[in-house]
Length: 67
Image 1 (tube, helix red, strand yellow):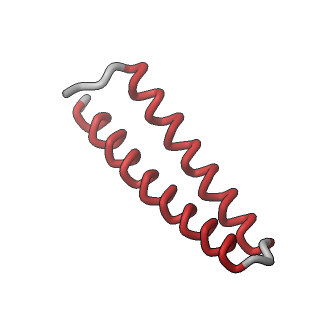
Image 2 (cartoon, rainbow, N blue to C red):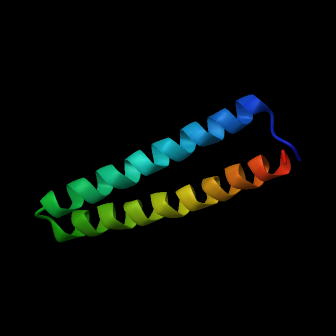
């Protein structure tokens, strides 16, 4: 299924937001005194990394179809 230009732009925007969320989680985790909260933020950072990879593959795959 080919994506429209708008859909591709939305995927790229979501990719950027996932990167931002990972960065924020990784920035705030070391500041937490509560070990459970720190671990949760680190886990969330990992989840956002996985989502980035999935979105990146989707965007790259779609852009490769244009060739």
